[in-house]
Image (tube, each protein chain N blue to C red):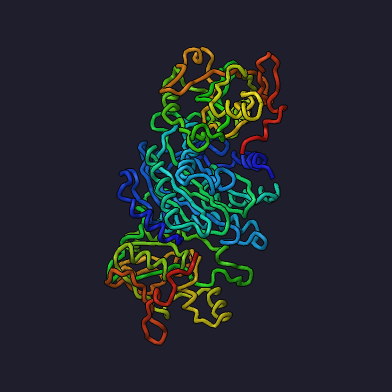
Length: 316
Length: 316
């Protein structure tokens, strides 16, 4: 089975949800309203040995860090503020007491650093690989959440940071483990009407695929330009290693954990080039067409359909 | 490593949590206060193939049901009201599309039946057994949560329902899959000052062990009487099968998903014998002694220490 087909089936049930659910399945976080007042946003994500890290080679502190920051990237995608987190850990039998405590301490410390205290959890021991499931709660705290839906024809398409090669080890920095979730950048963009995105998503499955989600949610398409893509050091390194152009890594590689958003073109022209040292780059525009086609203008001027190039199923 | 040792390590860090955390790790649910108003309780629990069910023999609808109701039993233990749930599913490669949709539909329907809409989640596919991690949010909704801490010397110890043999198939009813979480019963007890428990826990690891948690939280001990234990049909059947007395199954078997609570003795005397068909039974009393010793008076009158009998490490 394919994850996306199951998710599509799940989304068809959204109309049956009670009014209390203010953001149904299909966005970076869901949300519910409490009867006692307040609204809470929630995301859940899992990291598994052999899929998202390798227990034999990845330091425990980086596994712990990633388990938390992956979820915080979802919080950033809504421009929300973290409230707290709970963790369910399935540990392999034979995992030592000392390692379990280290893993737990590092998750707690990472979460605390982002003002997202760990306040509950569950521990199981089993005969299979480690899996850590983290649920993060967040709240709007004065900034309306930004949804995946909202792109308009004519919008500029923007990304934060630099893309590609997140699995590359660049002088000890490995982006998929060491990335910084864009929480404060997202809050800053979203809280100022002059810079507030119309829609936003975090890049976990690769730009082509995730921008496709923004397009599908608004029944539009998008064109991006290879020459404008900000390439990370990892993307450059991956390109040197495999000989593929760097832009291919920028659009196809997963786990960038940067933000992709669209914004009215006149506002995009006035966006700061960077915020606290993080580049904010216009990479293309939203165009008409309900097929959610993400096209790319290659350096030579030729336009190609990225889905047609086979990027639809890259990423996790 | 042993789960409980890790949990104990985690609880030692509770004093470092910010004031926003109103119920720290160590109870059936944790809780945080939102800056925007409101307080939300959260529990997370996981069911894994080979540990909590057997994918080859357990019907998918019962797996789905249990994944949800196990968490709702934690909600009941706090006398809270469910708000919604998110699910992270790790499915084995080769699991069919149709089965994945069925599993998802049954989880959604079970959750909806308890007014706990599924409003988010994550799906992964991997090469290992299925694991479903469910996070449930709840709120007080007018009834202060009941904690594990609060037992007082002289309190009566009570349980709901009947205990033991939850893995037994009794004419097609298998308690650990088919049990009813005691949500409404807990709300009814907790909302009336005349019947409000002083502390409460749900029975997942077996009565001896879980009552031990209530004792430890209040630095007290407890004595229960074998003759007063309500034995389930599963407990009787297990006893016939293995020749051990039924009370042994009632105190040692896990996954009862009933509630155990303590309440002032004078109030206990006025408790209804049953609520909506579910028995509420006084089975013993809280006594002084900080060792959290759970003792049992055997049918012949002899008193034994249940931890000494080896029940401490039964259950999951």
